[in-house]
Amino acid sequence: MANRASIKQGLLEKGVQGRGPLPPHPHSQSPEREKKAETRGDECPDYAGSLKGGWEERLRERLGDCVPPVFPSPKLILLATVHGDPAGFQRAWRFFEYFRPEVITVEISRFSVRYRQRAAKDWRRRLSAALKTLPPEAARNLAISRVATQTALPFEYRAARDWGQAHKVPVKLLDAGTVARRHLPRYADELLTPDNLRFLWKNEASGTLEEYVAEEFRRARLAREGKLRRLPGSSDGEDSRRERLWAKRLAPLMTGEKRLVHLGGWEHLVPWPGGGGLSHLLGNLHPRVILLDEAEQLSSI
Image 1 (cartoon, helix red, strand yellow):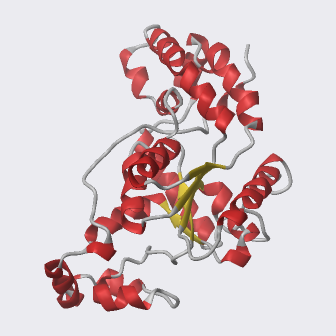
Image 2 (cartoon, rainbow, N blue to C red):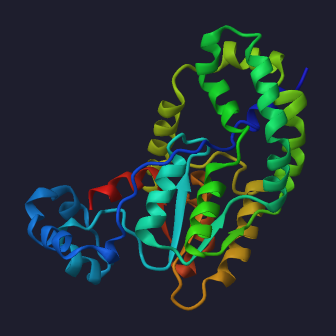
């Protein structure tokens, strides 16, 4: 019988693709849109009331009081995701369209991308075969939905790759692949077996994938505000080593005035009390942590 803890750890992976209408970039608005922004201050009190110090004055001049509260500083953005977010691809694309990064980095390794591309077809076949041994409603189970997202390339990578190719923006993969080398080869024989899916179906919490993602973003907001403590051991073990590697590889990319966006799981990016997290390691670069679900607000501009 496979080790349940290691199988569940494998669940903390990635998402599915979804595209939607893309908002215009704020630096290329039409005169009519600019005029509307200048005259609708009373129509967006949430934006006007949530602005803090340090926001770009040029955005105030262009958009008046309707600058979204999540619009970042012009250089380094840590875009915090929930792996497996069904709306993740669309949200990331919307943010790229709005912010127009000149470099994108992603929390994934070249090994992980290559392995997943080779294994994807076999993983989908195994998942489909295993689901046929369960009742039809099992496919909607939260744990099994999370497993299903792992049969595709992570949305973080796909969104960065596709947007980067469309706009001729370089995309850098920061991870070393140590975790992927240890876990990905086990998917076929452990994660995607009928026995494991039946176990997850019977024992995991109820709810939908969308509800799970929303709850994770709620926790991420608490952590960003300093109201949540990191799990013991996360700051002094493998997570810490990976975060230091990402910081080491990312820092040299911050040259000149280029805008850089890094996509990664929120637990690695938020500034944890007492230290830890990529935002602390890159503190001298003054990064801004943006939660991916906040990209929804960008369509209001």
